[in-house]
Image (cartoon, rainbow, N blue to C red):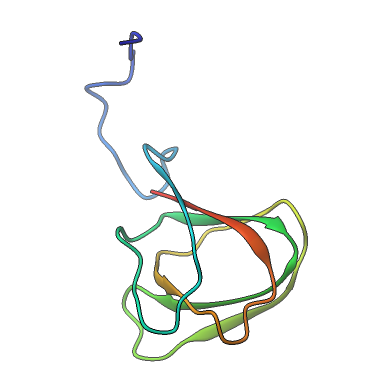
Length: 89
């Protein structure tokens, strides 16, 4: 196992991700973990359900390579045209 000089550092919303998850947009399922941000590999629209929201929101025309600083609990298939989305947690 590699050395981790940050092992005992406190984790916060603004600190770098400690985990990355492949995001498969779904209208029925939520993510396995709430994200700190989403990386968009191929641009387009991204429809998310923020962690504290009761409704979905669309980020329109997100450019390729963008990091969206949103604590998302779900990424929806309907309306999402972006791809290669990675959840940073």
